Length: 141
Image 1 (cartoon, rainbow, N blue to C red):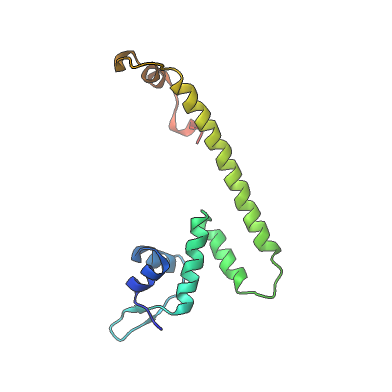
Image 2 (image 1 turned 180 degrees about the vertical axis):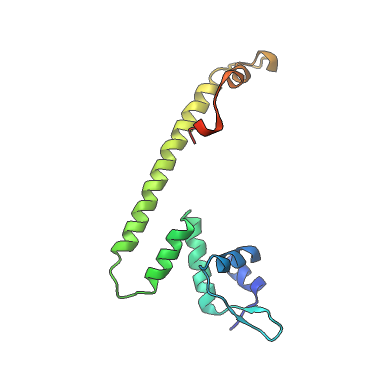
């Protein structure tokens, strides 16, 4: 069965623009075209699109997905490289979590500056935020 782009996107749970983007960056092979020049996606396209979407739902970068797709095409190879990719992603997630925890602590400390329903001109949070000489390049996140 062949699907036009709108139906393929719907079947994969994404937008038409997303399907086009995955084609553009080379994650999804170019589909056949109809006589009217409509894209016609196969079941294999849909399976690959679902695979990509699942990877993206795990916040995997495009380059990691590209590697996984390549490795998936080598079914007799050992999965050590796949494990290494996932381990690297776990490390990135751990780093992001540490940064987010630092951010949370900073926000909790900021929130503790104000204990009551004072007017905004005497709000300690506003004063604290106004006194910070932070620069975007020095941001913790």
